[in-house]
Image 1 (cartoon, rainbow, N blue to C red):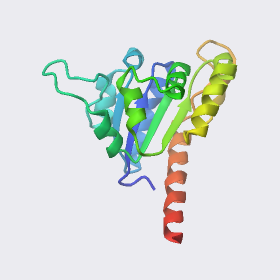
Image 2: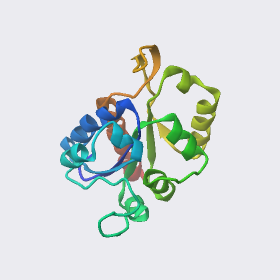
Image 3: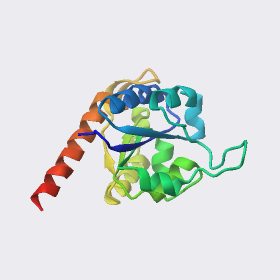
Image 4: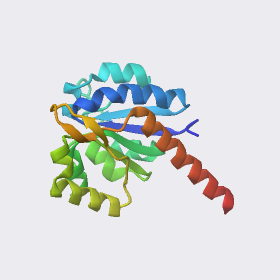
Length: 189
């Protein structure tokens, strides 16, 4: 159900960013075209070269190209996408999204998209359970943002609990089911 879909993948600064490489491969195998926007901190966890190679598209992180000054248009990205998936999505990015803060290209793009937004949180269990994070999730949910729940298991901190980003296969299945349901509803009307 992802054949021909335009998936805009946002990657934030989390150790779970390595899963974005697998997610990109799986989306492309399903027939999707993938473009990637990374926060500046995400580049500390996985390189734009890796993600550009896998997606076959230039990875965007800055508002401007530093060599020629040309602009990376968050508006064009927002119009291009059939879905904007942020995986992994950190507590920091969740908070900024919930409050309309747009201090990087990923966040500016979020405020510009017209397509469904899907977040796959990844953070330590105490951060995920914190009242502020849960309040931000509730705010974004009420704004129509969808969430793919984090999983329980061993976390980068060494603790064991809920906060692991959902596995790439789970995210791809969620997206496939979402678009299938959307197509089914179109056929009814």
